[in-house]
Image (cartoon, rainbow, N blue to C red; front, top):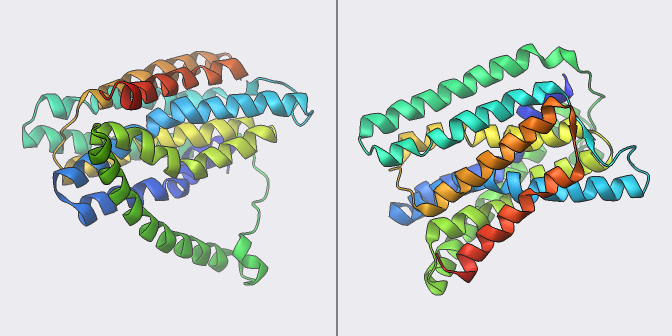
Length: 297
């Protein structure tokens, strides 16, 4: 399968497990208004974190890789195919605000259905283009060092990871709730920045490794593919399960993500993303952290 399809579809489905488990634990474990707030905050936080901190780290590492002669260029060479997921994010992420403005239940269910259908359409578009770019053979799962069967070993490794993530997610949800109460800051605001900062490690790590090795398409696709999940599939599920009550922090995350995504779309159209273009997202991350922890807004 092609780099764009693997990076934008397959990789995010698995690297998003931490966020998905945190969301489910918050909704069904903690429950109530606090659980719903943390769950919804996780959904709005991940695209923001990918657009700010994750992109910034990829830009820095691309520059480091260039000076260490691990890469040929300090900019990332990408395919115009990546414009597709960015367009989905730019259009759909702001629409996730609408059900909080029109509070009728039928609006929530309607938008939930729209988001789910958009994800199905996104899968179909990316799948049709999968053969345009080749990809090398996949590496064997780590567990295959003691278990010889590659496919079965992959599922076993995934199952073990999911169990560990479940217990870790329970601790994280409780800590976020306690910290927000103790510091007197917004629970949703803290969820938007704190949970994705930890749970986005898998996709950020993948993007950093691929970017450092010069696999630029897969590096950016893994991050934007994650953003598509959180502007289609996960909001679609969440809208069916919990009330859609948002505060100013959700609006800030949408604004920041949309600005960065438009900038990335501009560079993708030129097939080159400069390292400094990626690091601009760090400005939004620092500003948001100051709003939460400095101003206590």
